Image 1: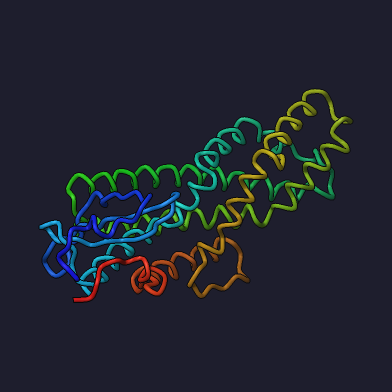
Image 2: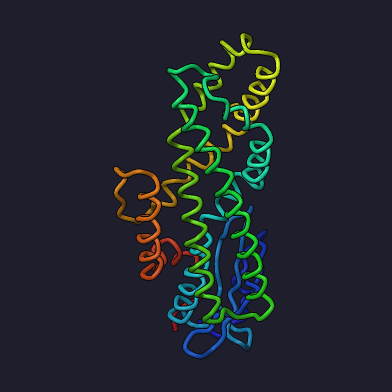
Length: 279
């Protein structure tokens, strides 16, 4: 049942690839072969240095290590699938048109405080996006390092956890500010549509450009996708949501760091994918 060529476990129409690094368990290295169909994982096989399948118990130990490393970047991968690079592009576009919000009294006394909050949220969005872009580059470099050395060293585990924490905290703060000001952004769009024509020409053009960038079809769509991932960031954490955002982000960082250190992969979901047999 064990020590077979992994090819015997490949099913018709499936694609397969071997992870670009080996996994060390109990002092021995193992390869992990992933079978997929239509872009989804269909099965997993763990093989020893001789290229033969190992017993189920050993395979599970190996997969646990793989899943722990993958967990650090699950949010990043999901976000990349949703928004690709449009979050970074949106930040650049906002930078070029946001200045009009600095003009006090533009929206009247009734709305001005809300517009100031929106202005702050956009600043936070840009700042955090710059951080996220840097962290993503660092994560890419880390994965390239692991691939080149074909093993995850202890320092790589530490770096992965640190980068995962930094990325999650930046994304969480960014997401909370977007969520808080979602209705305010819509108010600004409505106000511009109804009253923008009464503004002087220069202000009218500047506000129209901002409204276009923040419209539902542009930044609004990206913002909603980012907000939709808040539950993924919060999953498994005990959080106090009745605090100002800076305090929430700080507490989130502590909770996420603690969660990383005790994280256990959901083997009830992963187990059925493992095709290695019992000894």
